[in-house]
Image (cartoon, rainbow, N blue to C red):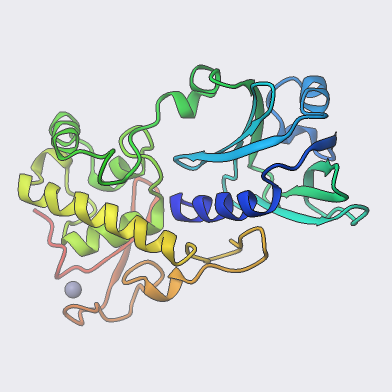
Length: 276
Ligand SMILES: [Zn+2]
């Protein structure tokens, strides 16, 4: 599942390719990909310019002229590709934006979980439930230590599902959560109220740095992620725990262990990340 660095990589690729393009036509080979009114989704964007592609958490926001916004969530395997006009849609192409400049923007999704919604710009915060409840972006400026301490104290949940919950912090998924918990030496089943202020401080720094570093490497490719240019991410080579169960910990050489925490596969070092 694309996490913040992967979605940001897609956003940058889309910006390079289709910013300022004008939409000529919208086709929906798989109408279920669209959750808003289908007729409006096909008619409203026509003739409008893609003025910007923004991102919030794992959501992409296509800002169109005339105050229309298309919100897109890739979920498991959603992908965009830009091809010459007349290109045959892929087997899993769900939405086709024909552009005025003789290109097409395909939205492809082998798992068919990704969703798109058309809203009036500004209404996305009230009409798209996941966006409404989204926590702060994991950056130095937006994720304050005070906020972290407050939500950690209030919740008594296990740290792993707590970090995956987008309403606490936006953008983290299974990969980066396992990485930052290993870096901070926190057992994934620790309850948040048992984590010291010092550890919260370290964890915050690790989250911010890890997301920035992964974004710089164009994200992680595990199953299928590629950017709009069809290029894979490079960060999989930098991972310390995710996908390394059974292999020696890079700090202490103890074999890494994989367990389920809140139904999610979780890899950690049983020596470095002791349960409190
Ligand atoms: Zn270790």
